[in-house]
Length: 307
Image 1: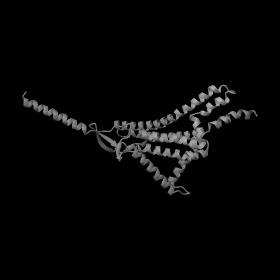
Image 2: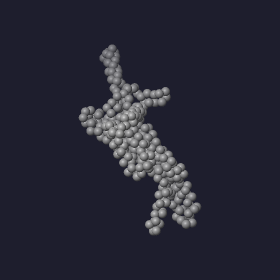
Image 3: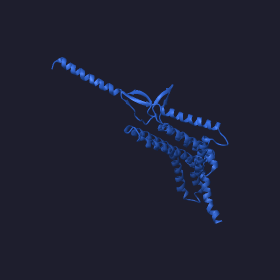
Image 4: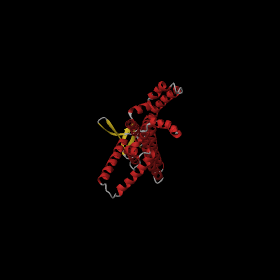
């Protein structure tokens, strides 16, 4: 084989490799990531696709609220009638948790707002075009599709922020309702340690009970962090799993088959929003209860029965 022929073969192989690499670089890859993807920025503040969806959810809630407020009538129209049914049903459900209509009225505005915010975010995330329409960016030699919209609750930052609002809000509500000193003793139970000095003569068992009661307070602090983790990861995990399920089904069978799973995700969106708002209501109810008062009633009841 001559040198010229060998050179020609090498050039041909290089052209084939070049065409192969070109076709590979033109392929658009869509990966579902655990984190929300940035699609822009305002100065140094990144704007992610989940954040845009969350702003959209807030805008929808504001527009609906303004429309309902402007068109309130004694004889309700269709839209007002639907929301009155929803609110009355939600109030009855909340009463079953709090057992007190006055307490329900105090916590209900936050609980119902969280429900609608989570619900609309969940549903916006499964709308056609959400997660599939976006811009193509080059990353490590690959063309990646970054969608313009993604479910707000599919971003762990959003769910953690909501959980922190719920848990810190419940503690602030407890301070307002039963007082700062009682809430402080719930976590750092100095009152229990003090009983060692005041009750040890009459109740020697207080030497064992008081340290245990104090340790329970420490567990309560850990429990507050567990609430944040539980609330945020449950919501994020279910919404993210739904995204992966729908993307996988669409990749395997593009038509008809994913539709039942789409309806399933609509139902999951409602259930997760309901769980999040109801747990928030439970945390607020627990924080507003004075355990010392209940203990006092418990100790007095046998005397009353005896009398």
